[in-house]
Each structure stands twice: as structure tokens, then as C-alpha cells.
Length: 345
Image 1 (cartoon, one colour):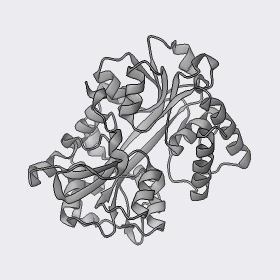
Image 2 (cartoon, rainbow, N blue to C red; image 1 turned 30 degrees about the vertical axis):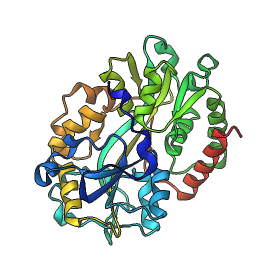
Image 3 (cartoon, rainbow, N blue to C red; image 1 turned 90 degrees about the horizontal axis):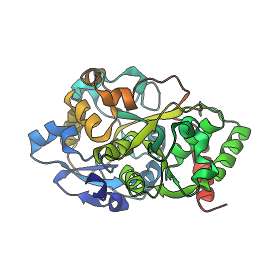
Image 4 (tube, rainbow, N blue to C red; image 1 turned 180 degrees about the vertical axis):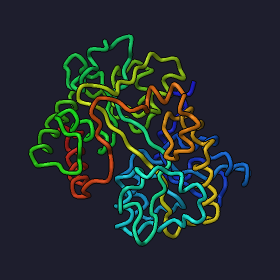
């Protein structure tokens, strides 16, 4: 039973999956799935050594504090923070044959590429929406994001222990679909909504396997979820729905790899790893194991007809808040406020 495979301890930021000693990948738990980077294994005989984290801010703090890795897997809104701190260096795209297959929309920011080079290789993307038990939660209850504040679900919900994702939820719930410009009034309204939602939270999940376990155990009925939590539940025949078209909408995000400055391993193997990720065959593995889409147009074309794409990745008619790079000061303000809310203040 996949849900019983514990990944939470990996967040200690120590190599939790020791393999090829010449390449250390600092990543989200779950992305160590070998089929996603199969050509790396075919070439070198083993997976990279992995260390894991639970959220982007935690990962940054550990790297800033001296943790050494060769490549890191942040989501888009964190790339600027790594750049500003001098923790990463540009990629040489002449060594990445499939770089040109990455859709332009995933590179449309000077944070990702500028006259100094390409700082970020986008690889994967997904959605954050309502996962719910279809046997205990009526469809009409998840027609609105206010299911998270409904007294009916007190102690029956779970939210991610991730500032970006909970603020995406709160902004959507209070009518904001673009977080590039957020007024003080909008911030205050979202914070008030989050405080109300906090009253219903049984637990904040640290990674998708924990979120899926919370639901599979019956501890919660409704969660703000990434695609992978839903995939894990489906694999265990749990009656899960994924509501991306609540009246107020849902969120999207994309992530990728940065080249850590002063990494202890092999730069050649770092490029082999990225090139394995960008092969078209990686898309099917990524979709099947985690439920995410690929940033390569060529790769996505290989899975266009898959039912999982229609269910969790297709365009929707409801509003969408895209988690793209936003004001670093706003992110810090959100993070500080979220910590207060979790503490009950």
C-alpha cells in the first residue's frame, strides 16, 4: 500500500536516498521515482543521491544555512530568492538539447533568464484544488472554496503546510486571482479568511503522502491538494474527487531545477540528470507516478490523450490563480502571517 510508504522523515535535509555519490539532488519527496529520469540510470547505473524537503521556504533556509546539493527543485516563485542570495548559477543550455522544447510560458520572466543566462529549467507543473471523499462529502459542498470554513467540516479538513499554497487558496476564496499586485485590504481579507479556515483544520500536511494518509485513514474528508495526493489515493482505490472548478477557482504552479553554486558532485552528471528529465518519455512517468504535467511541448504531446490529463491538468472555465514569481516582500509577509495563524493568533 503506497500510502504507508513514509517520506516525512526525509524532510531532515540529509541524504535519505543514497545512491550515486557524484550527484546530490535536493527535492520534494516523491520525485525520486526512477522512471522519470530513466536515461540517467541507464547511463550511470543508479539514481542520484536524494535529500528531501517539505516546502520551498524550508528548502531555501537549509541551503542558505550551508546544506550542499548539486541541483535543487524549487517552484517558480522561489527562484529569485536563490538568485538574490547568490546560491545558484546559470545553466549552459548548449548542453541541454531539449531546452528549446520547453514551452515559452514557463520561461516568461527575467527571473528565469536574462542577459546573464538561464537560471531555471522548468520541468513540471500541476494544480492545487479540493480533494474530497466522494462518499462522505456531497458534490455541492465542494462547489465553493468555503467548504474549508463550513462549520460542518470542523476538524475534518487539511491544508498544506506551505505558505504559497494556503495564500493562493485564501486569495481565491476572497476574490483575488492575481497575486502580482495585492493591496493591504486584500491581504487583510485573505488573512481573516485563513484564520476562519484554520478553525476547521485537523492537520497541516507536510507532503502529499501525508495528506493522502490523513484522508485514507478517515481523519479528514477535505484537503487542499496537489495532483500527487490524489494519485496516491486513487492507487489505493480511495473514493477521491478533485474539484478544480469551485466557483472561486483553483491554483496552478510549476517547478524546475536550479544549478547550485559550489555543488559537491559532478557538473556533467547534473546535466545528464536534467537531460533525462527533459526526454519525452519522462512525461508518461511523471503523469503516472505523481499526476503532474511536463513543461516540454514534445513531452506533453505524448500524453495528450491520457485520462489523467483531462482530470487534473486540462484547462478549466473557473478562475485560476497562477503561482508565478511575486513580490518577495509580500511572500515574506505571507509567511510570517501564516505562522501566526497556525499558532492560533
